[in-house]
Amino acid sequence: TEDKVGSVRFGYTAGGEILFPLADKISLGLGADFLRSGRRSLVSFQKAGASYSFTAEPSVWDLPLRAFLDYSPISFAHLKIGLEYHFAHSSYFYRWETSQDWQEWTGEANARALGIYGGACLEWPMSPALSLILDISGRYAPLTGFSGTGTYLDSEGTSAEEEGKLYYYET
Image (cartoon, rainbow, N blue to C red; front, side, top):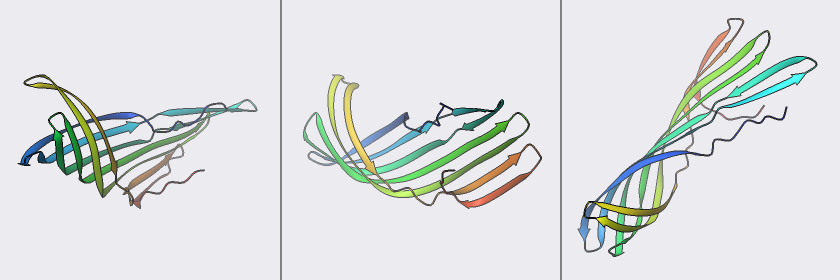
């Protein structure tokens, strides 16, 4: 085959922050983001007149909630540093098909983690109620210990369900 299972790389993010002034140029910030990404790949195999297909559909999302200190040395620039608590979710769907039978694996798992957050922001007021903002931020949160359920089904009527830690392996 020349098909490949694609990596989950691009997704979308939505979020917001609110600032509470503590002192001159320093504020307490609270924020949240929602990050989501997924990808569906179909790989087709041909060998000796027989055809096979493999479908892979992994999906991930994360909801980090953060508290941070915002320092604004000048009115249109902000520096941010703080902590985040992440609520992460992963799901998968895999299906192997031939012309006579199929096998299917589905599952989902959750993890929680504490991480750090930092960033820099430039703000250009467009009107009293609207600003154009350029925000560059980063985060570090080692998400491990995903736990959940997985289900196996096949065309012969076999089914099995497992519960516990989610592991990644290549086959």
